[in-house]
Amino acid sequence: MTSRGRSLVTFTTSEFALSADNSEPLGRGLALWLVNAVKAKGCLVPGLPEQEDFGWYFDFEVGEVPHCFVLGGRVELGGEITWIANVERRRRFLSSVFGGRKRGIRSEALVLMNEVVRSIPSVSSVAWHVESAFDRGDESQGADSPLAP
Image 1 (cartoon, helix red, strand yellow):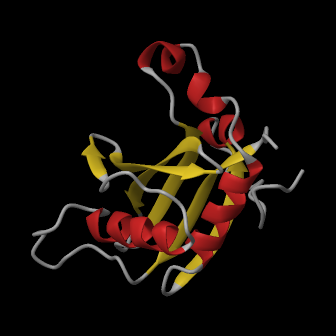
Image 2: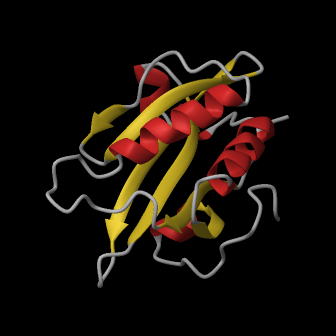
């Protein structure tokens, strides 16, 4: 089953804070932890997390359907990090250009990533958002589940 709606998740955790000496790129430890957690759920993860200018991403498959988890961090006043992540479909370049990454996201992929995110040590404030509302600056409509209306 495919989903239309809440594919963006925000959360906080004290477990993967900024390193005191800035020796590790922001999010690397969390991205590696997430890959291992997805693998532990029995899903194929064909590689390690890769870094981009926005943060980190890794590919995973649910029911042989390729998806991508895109992770970035927003450092708040006081140093707390709000993690912002998207579940997307993995697509070829041309399809991505025409919005293919946002179409055909499997509900099972969203449920999987909800379970994985909620299992992060010291996680709190988990909220699933409609990406278009979030992009407009509306973070007040977050829900407990990616399948919420």
